[in-house]
Length: 399
Image (spheres, rainbow, N blue to C red):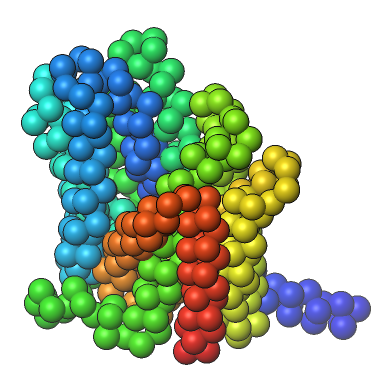
C-alpha cells in the first residue's frame, strides 16, 4: 500500500507534458489567416478592378507589387521595433494600420489611391507579421514550439489558398470592394482578442541602433539559415511562378483545373506545416536541432522534378503535393530556428526570413525565365537550387 502511495505522489510531482493552448492564440492565428488571404486576394480581382478604375490589368497588377515590395523592404526594420519595444505595441499598431489600409482600398476610386492603400497594407503586415511569429515562439512552451508555429503557418497557407476563390466569389456577388471590406471587418474583429491575449512584456534594454537590423546576419547559424532560405525559395516559389504555365502546356489544363491545383498546393503546405512542427519538436527533444531541414530540401527537389517532368498527370500532381509538403515543413522549421537561436532578435530574424523568401523568389523566377523553355528552366533551376539548399542545410543543422 505504501508503494502505491509513493507512486501516486511521484506521479503527482511529475510535470505534465507541455500543451499548446490554441485558444490563447486565437487572435494572432486569425490574423495569420487574414494575412495569408491578403497575399493573393487581388489575383482574381484584377480584371474587375481594372475595369472599375479604368486602367489596364497590367497597371492594376502594380497593387500586388506595392504590397510585396513594401513588406520585403520594411519587415526587418519593423521587426527591430518589435524586438526593442515589445510585441504588443508593434502588433496592435500593425493591426490597426491593416484595418485602415483595407478600408482605404475599398474606398479607392483611382489607381494611385489603390496602390498607396496596398503599400500601407504591406507596411501593416510587415509590422504585425514578425511580431506574431516572435510572440508565438517566446510564449509557447519550448517542447511544443514547433507545433505552435506549424499551426500558424498552416493557417497562413490556408488563407493564401482560400484568398483566390473567396475574392472571386465576393467580387461576383457584391463587387471587388466587398473583398476588402471583409478583410477590414475580420481584422477589426480580431482586435479585442489581441488586447486580451497579447500581454505587455519587458522591452529590450538599450534601444539599439539601425545596425541592429543586421543582427541576424552576424549570428553564424542564422546567417546560414537565411542564405539557405534564399536558395530554397528560389527553387520553391521561383518554380511555382511558372507551375500553371508548365502544367497547362503539358496537360492542356483549363483555368478552372489549374485553380484546383492551387487547392492541392494549399493542402500540401498546411499538411507540411503541421507535420514539420510536430516532427521538429520531437527532433529537438532528442537533441537533433533542425535535423529535418535536409530532408525537406531533398523532398522539394523530388517534388519539383516529378511535377515538371513526371510521366502522366497523376504523378505530376503527386509531385505538386510533395513539393508543397516540403515547403510547409521547411518554412516551419526555419521559423522555429529563428525563434529559438537568438531570443533577443526573434522578430528581426523572422522578418529576414520573409525578405529573403521574396528575394529568392525573384532570383528563381528570373533564372527560370532566362530559359527558352520554362519547363526545362523550372526543372533545372528548381532541382539544382533545391539540392544546393539541401547541402547548405547540413551546415545549419550542425551549428
